[in-house]
Image (cartoon, rainbow, N blue to C red; front, side):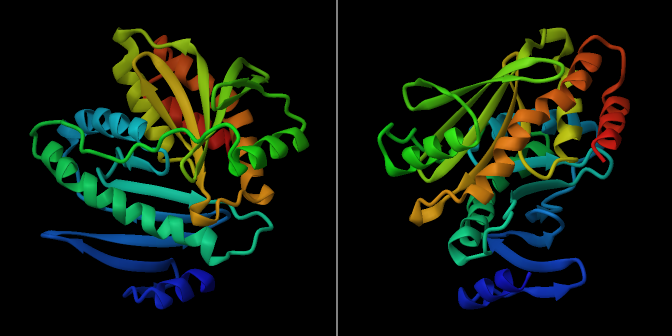
Length: 292
């Protein structure tokens, strides 16, 4: 945690240190929250307990957070179904990369920026008001011949992948133990995004329990998040290269690995809930245990 503490000091952030990690008090207008920074395997940056959600409003909040997550390129809003806390999680698996400022700063900047835009809407939904989405920045796909795109192509080739091109996207055709699916890899501004599309369609009658399962599952993840857009289940993970535009192999490798395995592990849970064989709680606990 020392490099993160040094970065916070250099940028003149106020923060507290405890056995759990670092906590940064933040405020925007009349809204307050805490940025809790902890390290456990991946360097995980989390914002916790933004506002508690009453039990009767948690299904509506789960739907709202899913729509919000679909709009994000980086980070994931989570809902703790047991306690009702809303969290914004961003994380970075450093691998063998040095915890340099250029790698850490985008994580520190992302959470406060997204929270400032989203908090009024989150509080409004908590109080039973409008579920209108806030305006969030939407980076455009980076042109095909950019240096970052060339770095990404070289990394995928070195990793033994043979992607096909579709405009700015590179498409991986993944064959898992339980399913086959498509993973789209692309640059969006400075963000490198891996987006896997599950080979199933969730019918309208099953979307409420599947959304609850998805929400519970996201709270168990460190890297990436699941989303439900219309009838499609997607798994997204991403890395912000920041102003340098550098894409270290040690950072990209975990993103590729989870993109090739996450759907294979969690897909049985989506199917079980979709067909009514398990409740979202039972399925999420079973597969979270199997994930270790």
